[in-house]
Image (tube, rainbow, N blue to C red; front, top):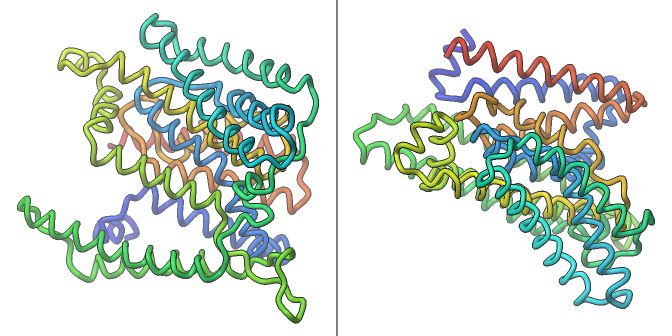
Length: 401
């Protein structure tokens, strides 16, 4: 019955099941924490926590779709993040505007260069990606330690810290409401253009009531998210009565939305995206078809390197410092998010929105267990079980397909 309803609504059963699981888990955690989990303040923190893993997962989808792997993203996050912190605290005077701008540029450049190096070893020298990125995992974790000589680098520039969603790291209530309204309008426009394109190519669009229900569900999700973010208290910004004003949507969330939207567009609407999925579906056929497979694989590692650098900026900005411990186990969470979101290790199948939902699911479980005072080892065991179950589900799904 449920599968029939999803088919009539033309909804992806995998994404729909993930959303349903998230809702159930959120309700259970909220009951177990006495209403703390679904508080506006915790939901704001959860949205920020999700961004780091989700940003890197957007790139990991492409890598796994192309039958590759990148185990170095966590260490690269630490290396580029420590380099950015070192520039702000050692290379420039404290509070220098030039310093934090240069630090971001250097972090992105390091990410691209490391990605290019690893991509060249994989694509041109034919060294397995597992070996190359495992070596990168070790080397760049060590390099991060050497950059700071094992010290925590602080403080970072206040404007830079805003990129992490902390103090002054949200856009405020008014701007969030405007952004929500624009998102709601985009949902309608996207639905209308989709129906128009289907008619243009001779495809019968879904009944109007189906699209209306989809729009209503998206509107509800947008309204709920914006409402929760606007209720999150900003204790550094109070009104005349001394009550904290609402934060609004965090800057890291805006960064994630832009990256996820862009990566989804590339996957679905560009030649590059089609090449990646074609290569992942059948590398030999892609090579015989004349696709630039060497360049394609090389570019994927540059992409993951840049996204890891962006994640490092968000991480160090949120912490307000550069610490050698940042990014530990991040590569495993990133890969887990992509796989839980429906990306298959068999290649050729993956979804950026699914990976973002996977990251949200992982962070929801982790956040809830922290609130329940579950120890770190037990949290890792539980998330590992979730990963195994999701891979098993992928195997079953592939057999049915």
